[in-house]
Length: 278
Image (tube, rainbow, N blue to C red; front, side, top):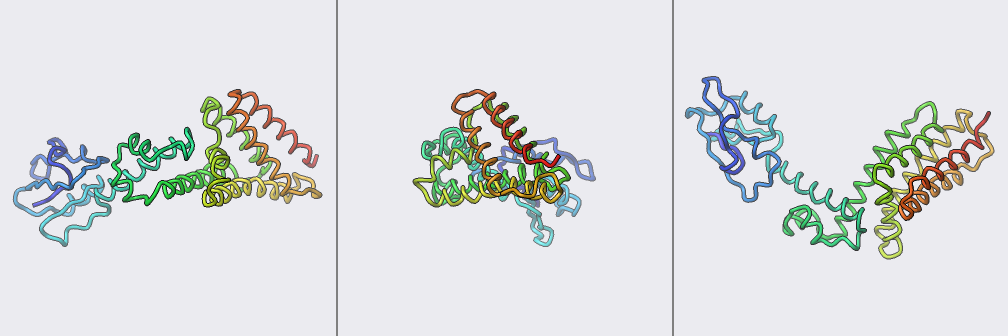
């Protein structure tokens, strides 16, 4: 006998057939669902234990296969584990969206639970408090900064100054797509939380420092390649560029006018060009 994790209602015909042509049950309806209390639907395959081919096929669908012969049971990932990851990710994505739109203090735990569809018990299984969820949101923003800014833009190419200008263009494109709504998630949290929650302030400072560090690193590489003059205080220039970008995003959010952002970043490009070696 084979036991496939999931509710009986999710087991429907049409998934495929075995070597003898017997139709096997469908498990596709159960994938990605939160099954609630675990149910086990027994499926008998001609009274014979499953072969390795069936186990591999089910594993590829991320479904746990249980049989009376425990030596056969060796799933790579269980359906329960997938559901846990899905539930936690659902909470985190909802929190990121609501906090970006409303701020941390104006987003209640009830708001997050209602929009995510997750129960309070499940929430406290993954996060001990709203603050802990807030730190997880910051970790997600740190990951985005590393991947989208650190790796995609400042990848150590042959044109470091061009990388800085690429960052400016990305900021404009993102704000255009957002309709000048929302602003910078990190900038918003920095304004809201830095004076009232030191734990948040320290974490935000770390992430913003890494963001600013990519600019400083590009300036250093540009100088070593002979693109920039040698008698420059690169740390001060990096601070100026970083503050200019964040400030331009904030003013654009308030005025709801993309031309403000475009004008500010064009001026920053002119500022950098002043130090280029002709």
